[in-house]
Length: 114
Image 1 (cartoon, rainbow, N blue to C red):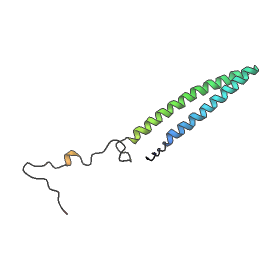
Image 2: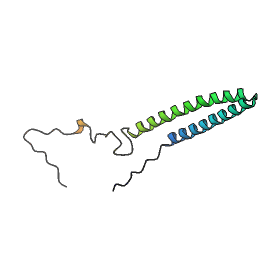
Image 3: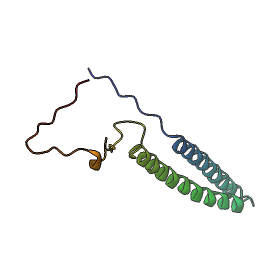
Image 4: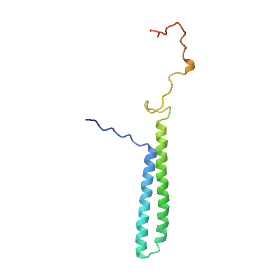
């Protein structure tokens, strides 16, 4: 039986973008409810509620795009050459090629014993 893998915690900028998107969505839904109730009542509040709803739709779309971009940035940062995890993607060379001695023909390469 396999043990389920633990999910990694999302980076801070992704989590704040998600919270911002949820708040913007809640603002938009409140605008929809107020606009619907104001239209049933024939109230003057329908026009400001519709404008708030339009701004909320724009803001929610903006926040969703921000989530996608911040997730991509965080994923690229994880796969960067100097990332903190050894299995993050790319590996740095242990020693530059110019610093390595070339083996000479006819000689066997022995490691020095200390």
